[in-house]
Length: 395
Picture (cartoon, rainbow, N blue to C red):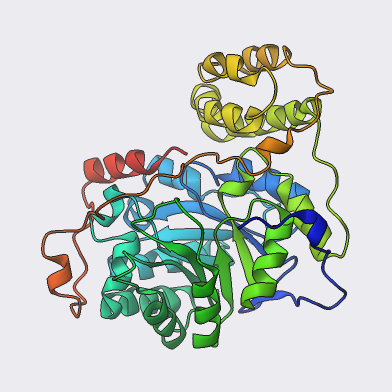
């Protein structure tokens, strides 16, 4: 469903309260979704400059962090200007999760989110991500370990509706989150089988709001600032999680800050302004990963930032091969900097597209023992951890 801006009004004074997550008060009630290969410090810091809110790291694996994996440590890293510092952790072993939560909080992390919604085969095949809520007792053990390990630092969880329409898990997951001490639950209102296809089911968000006494964060199809207001007004959720809608559009957080403060969103940036933003983004990726890996990371962003602009299609084949900042800026210079942002790009899908999966991969016999709380085997050796970390990177 589309929500034309002409039919919506910015938030009225006092219409929405701060998002309260334990001791944290977040305004506007907007959370940057943790996304693999996307929400590293370089992008989080860029989004933060456009508007306040909560900005979550990409998924960090507990075992990789505890073993000191170099890439894991880079992805978990932060700077003093990042407050509150928020990290999403992934793990299926309660011992690892509890130990990681303690370690993160000891180094100053102020919010921990837990991934129980990832739908991709390489995760669910291991019994992780959206497979975990199928086993409520296992889910409870993992959440309990994180809450105990985190101490006063708030823990939240993020889930999907379920595996398939026949195997919905979100209401039970909400009950577990509440009983085990989580401070909020985020719901991506699609099943794992849907991946990122179709429309997010806002009725599921409404049902979860009614079912739990925790703040519920709605996730799915926040392409414009108006979508966030619409979702909160329709479902009663306490805040929204912004994912694919901000890829190549970090200024979306400026729009969100405006409408929640009662103002219309500003005009989208011209292409010249976007090139300036891309330059800052590339510099931060280079600072984080080094020149070679930083520019490789930037390649996908070149596609996302330029989508829809006249003449950009002929450039993208070259942009995805750039090795240095100078080459990138030279190519971008072929488009008139005064070119306005194209309306067609406002709701254009970036990153993961509209496909679905006919079958969600699970460990053999996983559905036969849903009352079991035994953690599935996760990567343990250094070689397994490095291969696992590498497989999760990318946009």
